[in-house]
Image 1 (cartoon, rainbow, N blue to C red):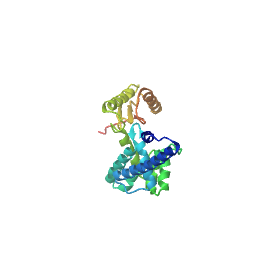
Image 2: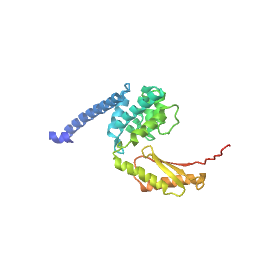
Image 3: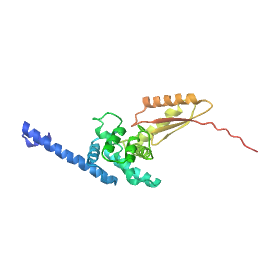
Length: 251
């Protein structure tokens, strides 16, 4: 539209000409963005179609976090963890970089983005390890090795670190504090800790007041109150822990 207005020649043939030119330029830009992401991640080259889909993620955001930048960050985190564990760093980088590629076609293909993404990377020659790492990072399919578990961990670190999703430190700390206050407000709760940057709430209860059945109910009630009272990105897991220790001393 801007080009047509600047040019001043707005008629059917000119519109078609400009649209075709812009489409071609946009395709080149998207491919360049994808290839640049592969280089930034330090991964070996991927199929051109995978690079094109990666480039599309530049225009997608999740809770204001750019998905392409997030994918590169997950690739770096994956490489660090793989190196520490003595695993193949290149496989780790590819799993991290491609883990959200299904989101590039989520408006066209139905199904969980992890499963859709796994089907895409499989069709374009990625190894079984990468395919399963992408497919299993949200537990939509079982993990057949360490990759899906590591992607899940790296994904959580990238998405939940303070500032990742345009959440300043003050807001983040207040949310963590409010989470713990909600939990300790329930009868039988001894203490509560918000962990994983506020993505999980671990609640310790007094075993003489809360039995196993009541623990399940308490977890649901706390989760419901969190849903009703707080605003937060993503999901928050509520884990209720009931521990009974029996101690005797042999003299």
